[in-house]
Structures are given as C-alpha cells and as structure tokens.
Amino acid sequence: NAADPQRGGFAPGAVLTIYGSNLSTTTQSADGGPLPQSLGDTQVWFDIDGVRTAGYLSFVSPTMINVQLPLDSMQSNVSFSTPRTSIEAKVYVATTLGISEGRSITIKPYSPAFFTSSGIQGNVPAMLHASHTDPARVVPVSEISESERAHVGEVVMLFGTGMGLSTVTLPPRRSYSF
Image (cartoon, rainbow, N blue to C red; front, side, top):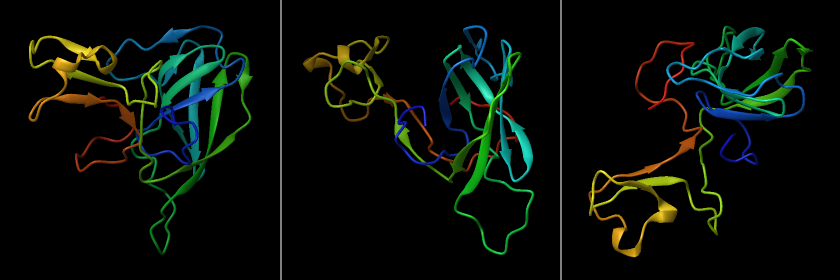
C-alpha cells in the first residue's frame, strides 16, 4: 500500500501507489472533493471476480499514480459457501497511450500501515499535534519542541491507510476522506 510498499495485500478504501513508466502524459493532482475516476488522460480499474471497478485517483504522473481502492471491493457478485478472507484482483492503467498489462493484487479486509515522516530517524509515523500552548498551532511532529509534547486529552492526528471497513455505512463506488 502507499504507506508501506512491503505490506502484503490492500484493504477496501486503501490508497495504492503504482510505479512505472508511461502511466500518464501529464502530472496532475485531484482538486479535493470526491476523487475522480479519471485524472488527466489516466484511469485505473480493478477486475474483481470479472467485474471492472474504477479506482479513485488523487495523483497521476508519467511514473507514479496514487489511487484509492473502492470501499466495496471485498464484495463479490459470486456466491461462495464460506466467506472469503481475501480476494484476488487485477489492476489496470489506461491512458491515451494504451492499456497496461493486468497486475495481480490481493484485497484483504484490512492491511493497515502508517505513513512516515521523511528525514526522521526510526520511521516515525507522520502526525500532527495541536499544541497545548497554542491550540491554533498545528505542527508536524518533527517540529514539536520538548515543551510542546502531547498531554493526556490532546489530539494527535496520525496518517494511515488500509484500516479496512468501518461500521459507518457509505454508498458504494464513492471516495471518502475522514
């Protein structure tokens, strides 16, 4: 997944990073809001049990794509006698240059990982803290002084992906940020 390329499998709603060449003819980021299923000339789709499902793009460039796996990707149109703990799927990239060869991925109920702060020794998770000395000041953990360390009851935001589905009911085939 985008936070940990070594992690096996992807959870519904997770952000995936695809690396390669000729992935787009432009470099473009989504403008917030619901993520689009097409960005520049690029689309990504997942073949899950023979059903083609579009991904939601947040960034495309000639060498990298960030795409969100649809939230309902663990659902299947195929009946099984026992629930599956994972689903095999293929991911495709389509541009005006053509369609890529499908790459196999595994979709699991959850596959969590935290994004890390670059330049900080020990792979410290990327996080923000609302300072107790000035609640309007939200700073990256790398800029927090000893006197600004989090106290009990304060908010620290961690950035992760692959946490899996929640108990919140959301319409399928949409992208959400919390």
